Length: 128
Ligand code: C2G
Image (cartoon, rainbow, N blue to C red; front, side, top):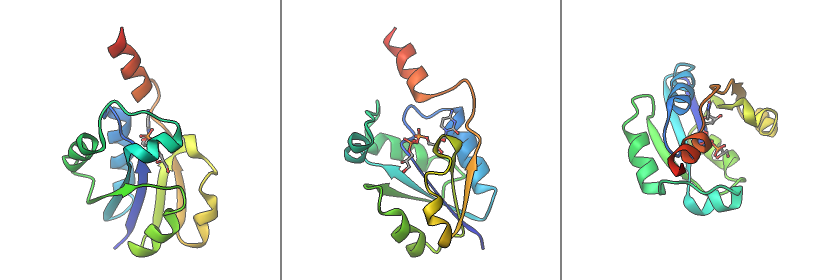
């Protein structure tokens, strides 16, 4: 059984998020998602339109996701990978190279981001 992990905010859930989760899940048999809490988003310099609870409800409905747990710090990834016995860490290529230090624990794969869609784009259109 190949176990995958990914992380994100998944605000104003859209096609780019779905595609990322689908491609991540198809690399193995089980996908865990570390969902950024509202407090961790502040540390990341992000503000999400939807609360952690709402973002979690949406992710729960995605058939590619097997487990959701809170992402509360930058440093927790090593412990998560060990705890969930992870084989592959997958994230979008906007993070290329940023998590290479975890490569002693598992494979690291940066997948291409979907073009022409983002939470920022959706939020900006909502404000108009
Ligand atoms: N994504 C994508 N295409 C888009 C937008 C997002 O493939 N058009 C991917 C990102 O690359 C990421 C995932 O969807 O793998 C979640 O994106 P975000 O919610 O923007 O994640 P982010 O806030 O960058 O959090 O510690 C890591 C962070 O928590 C990542």
